[in-house]
Image (cartoon, rainbow, N blue to C red; front, side):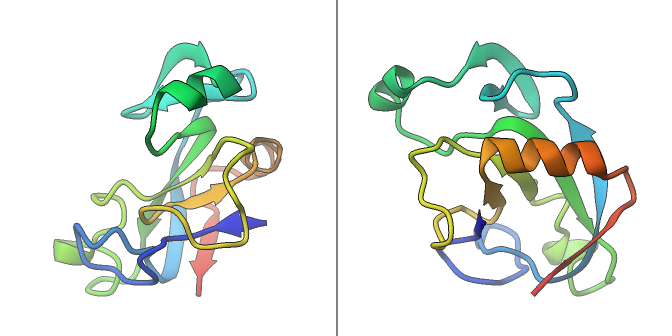
Length: 132
């Protein structure tokens, strides 16, 4: 189960929408990290998410693994104001408290930490991803 943008689908920069169309996995980040590892700007902070931390800090958590997406359709989700990679759209893990199956992200595709780890382990850079 996943969660996409609470702002709906869309491709324009700064819209916080989930981009549609054909993409590839441009980069895999977090190999070997513990489940729940916290990432900031695509780097591990060295910390693991906990319920206690969730109670004291609001925000959009990026946990466990990152699959950084890049659009492949020029003018739709690649280059210019619609470039998925330049928008930093990822497939990534989120806290268990997040409700999956209901739109709630700021453009990323959110998954459970176990699911994102399993997908991370099963794909390679360049794997196609189609978002509808």
